[in-house]
Length: 297
Image (tube, rainbow, N blue to C red; front, side, top):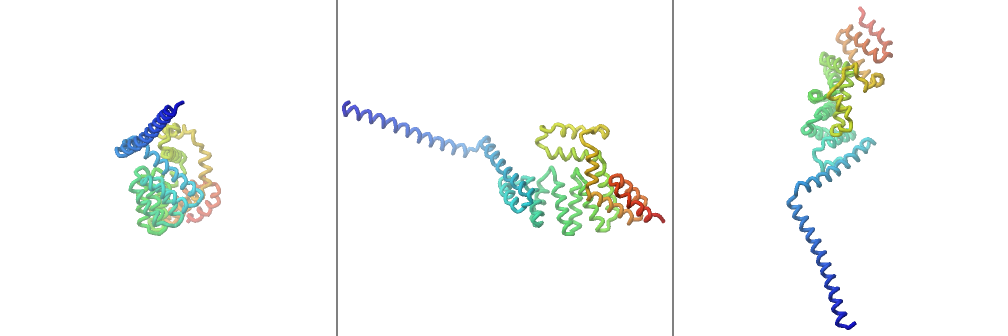
């Protein structure tokens, strides 16, 4: 092969290589240019993609914070909650769990600020923030503010037992005895009534599964079409009664109510309350004779 022919082939090869390299470079620059234009336009699909990624990142941070909080490591949990909150600023569950973490490390001032913010923005469950604020002020013996927030929580709380008992205890300490007695009566009768407790359970589960109710059709059905007490079979009454008997704090609340009735010279009502309590806690029979002697002239 002649030297001239070889040179022509080499030139042809170099020319093809140059064209390939040039096309690649132009392609890369074209892609960068298109991406830059799309970023500037910021179409809805790109916003959705970015938002989905950020939500996923925030949720991962929340889950890690929740895991650490369950392991009683509130300080470490707070680091993940703060990072997640930078991404999702008004995430109510993150804010609520942050408040719990702050309370666990005795930083009630930070918990208070978070809970007040939560109270402003959480339209679905404002009673949770109100109840926790009530607890903070009660621990500081700021009875006026504690009462204010417990009462605010009662306005929207579908599960009123804890708020009523907390208010009753404060009323008792501040000598508002009639109001205390009324709240004890309401709270304890509701808490010990199987049907009322069942309705509360269904309501709580409906909130808990919220956006996943399609996976729990029975909860959704029971929430909107609650059967009569006689037809309820999905919730075992025996389990309910065992849980009630094992709950020492409710037994103490009931005893406090009986003592309150006695202090108001309402002996017959105290005896009736004791008989109701014995149906739940048979061990209280031993106290009945002493109560009877105390109210007998």
